[in-house]
Length: 562
Ligand code: XMP
Image (cartoon, rainbow, N blue to C red; front, side, top):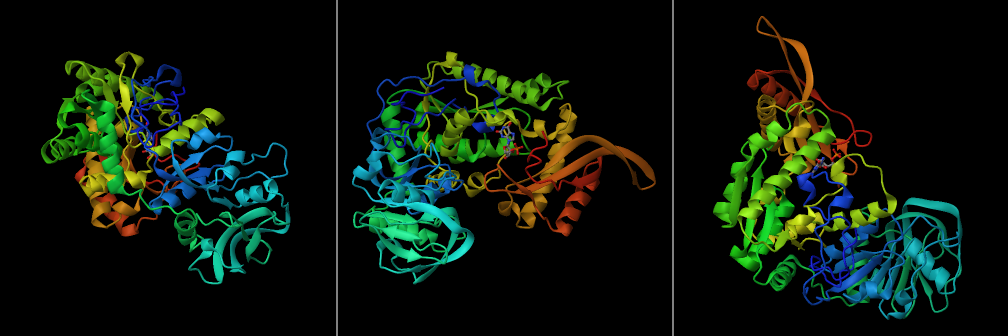
């Protein structure tokens, strides 16, 4: 469901025309509501005035690297947004636009229906950088030509400068780059000159005097070693950006805007123990102090010492109003007899909403719900609306609090990537253990116990999980892994301990590396770490007599077992 254009929840930056699709309470909650039933977003009652951050816009032509371009620009302290190819001029009205990047994409400029650049891209007077397909668009639309390359250039290549340009300032004459293209620029558009060539591309880079550049290679990928310098040159030397997108500025600006938005209203925020809700809460607290109440629901599906840790940080260290609800029994009894993973998620989501609503009601009148929606969630929900991608697990289909709560949203992280959230969190003084914690799913241990969830199984799994964490951390592996955890399978096997035959549970270890959880590979953990973990689990947990290691990547597996 689309949000209104002037949605007040879009705190950064405004002019925010992006619709969030369904509003998520937060992915961490794993609330499995259907899209149609979930939309707490409402028209504003006077949102904050536009912020107009200095920005570069990336027009996304469908390259797998488009998001990466946005991240690379932001890494240079310049704010950056992705916009679709058909976005009108108004799409950038809320920005102090310094430049436009046209991304790569799978189309060929000559194929029917190929997405083009909008006229405003050329007449807005800001510099333009076309990357791969984006460069071919510049050639095609500005009077040059594009032709199929005699040989596809894919992978590492060397381009050689043949004329000076601001874009390649400070780089050697020969630049190692990553190429991935079938078409190439044939004739230059009027006013352009070639500034670099490669073996297969006579025009590997082109420029004109109006600050328009085209490059055939991908500066955003790690395989282009000086890519960051090229993006930096574009942002600073070509576009004249000043580098105002810093964690310090973000925090200061967010605080100011949250104050404006919230006024004297009251805000609630659900804490999960994860980084997104923590940074959201801390930002809102900085802005409106005691007007914020945080609710932390112990659903009984958390890891050992987790509830105590969250309380310690938020109540004692950060001084937030924290409502701690011990609802463990309620969740476990609601899960009694349930074995289907999706049903577990639905029950946990529904119970959470009930508990949360009850607590919120006890606070009296509340006006706002603060939640840690991130930029990838925003992009994702738009994309999934367009592509109706197949549902694997319901957490990919974000849900929200029911309409009846009638809360307006405060989403200060709505335009941030995860690494930027961590930087903002560090700026706000949150402890590193909280900022760099491995992801933990909202339904918690319930989806790591295969079959029915019982209090007894939760205890077995908590003990095993504790050992996994302990050993992984002891070996310095924690930060290198996306996730590492134990799963309590519903299989029992025969073993022998002392002279006794045993018939006990099998625990599976799962440790994966990943960039974004969309794909993952099983981690090649050292054998001696595996041995120590297995040994300790069977020795310290009398109910487990066997440990196995999951060596399935994603796809075809998923990270969690349920
Ligand atoms: P899968 O298992 O789909 O998980 O490969 C990808 C990432 O999402 C987490 N995950 C969840 N997070 N609610 C959540 O908040 C859920 O229901 C849920 N299921 C999986 C998982 O831990 C991994 O990081």
